[in-house]
Amino acid sequence: MKYCYIEPKFPKKILSVVMYFEYSEENIPKMGMPLLEVCHNLKDVTRLMNIQAQSPEVKNGKIILDDKVLIFSGVFSRRVLLKKEQWTQSTDQYRQEDRYLNLVGMYANPLLYKIFVVPYWIEKNDCLLHAVTCLSYAITDEKVGEYLTKSDIEIHEKAKYAALYDCEGKYAYYWKTGKKAELLPDPAEIITPRSVN
Image (tube, rainbow, N blue to C red; front, side, top):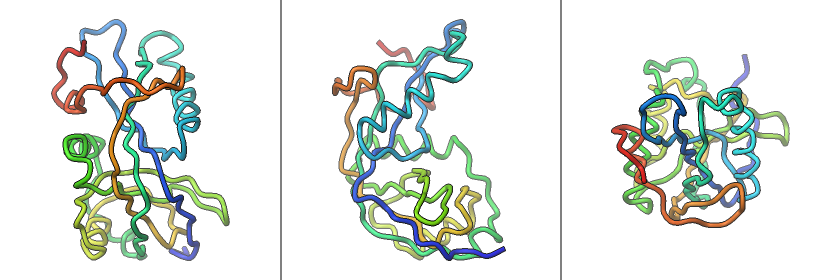
């Protein structure tokens, strides 16, 4: 298998989305879940949420989506060179819980973090990007490489680069009406659920 030979095109700005939902028949408070797919604008956010709304669990009423999402905005910082070893020598499983824990820190102090974006799928000029986690603002490329070599984050083997984006801030957005909203609850709700008013 050939690795790391296509250079993905990374946009200047991205949006990373946290979806909020609750279970209709269970006594579980509202929760948030960071979505992997990178959005490029607010219309893209609405498109992504409309896809979520078509899932069987939502359509049959088992899951109720909140009409607000939390958005982290990011501006391109730099590319990170990928290496074959990051696919062939990974040792640790990258859990969804890890993404949640990282997200809590970025919510509290977004300017101290970078959003780590990887090509999940790439073919010539077409690329699907995933925002897989957030990392320290001061992280070096060497440390990013070490992190990737240890983890099993899904990155397309053809991709030559991943990218880091400076987190500019956060805001809430009504994805159905296209209007900004008041700030959402802290994503710590994801880890230690509490009632959300």
